[in-house]
Image 1 (cartoon, rainbow, N blue to C red):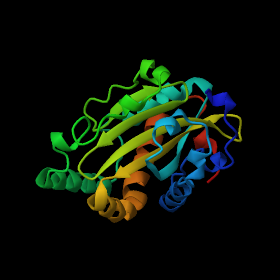
Image 2 (tube, rainbow, N blue to C red; image 1 turned 90 degrees about the horizontal axis):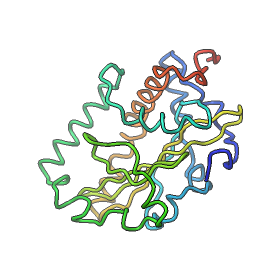
Image 3 (spheres, rainbow, N blue to C red; image 1 turned 90 degrees about the vertical axis):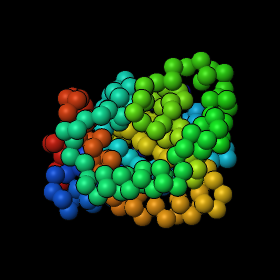
Length: 234
């Protein structure tokens, strides 16, 4: 599948950039959350091996670009850049999460990939197993699965869940393209179900908005000529 075969996205123009004002920025980010159908209705290869996972979140990414820009999005999404203005609340939440995980053993080696759950690489169709895994994610809790011209997937597992991060490159109504992020999860029993329900408001109100702002800042800093969001009206 290539990006030019995907249907035009009806909501993309609203996500061509997040305006600078705090109120308008918060409103734009709230609109960046998409219905699950924005992911499930497209013919992504990830559907072929995640039938027992549920779609937890789908977000539009303010990364307007051209057909061949998807690899740049993957690099920028995982790039470490201390110059980005992240949310203090989001950083604090992550710090608390990792401390809790260490205390309760959620992230111990026997709770992760190849121990508690087998890696999804074992489920990949032959052509995806032969495809490049993509971005080197050293320093990140994710393990890459595959990278295509318009699609990337990585997995993570701990004591609470087995998850998949999916990035896609979708056409928009303006004739360009933008990124789309989906999170798929398979909770681990009652603990996992409780954990996912408990963190849901924090994900939607703090963690993902901060992540989307950081991705947008990195995209703009890349000097992508297709990103004309600075010229968009608030």
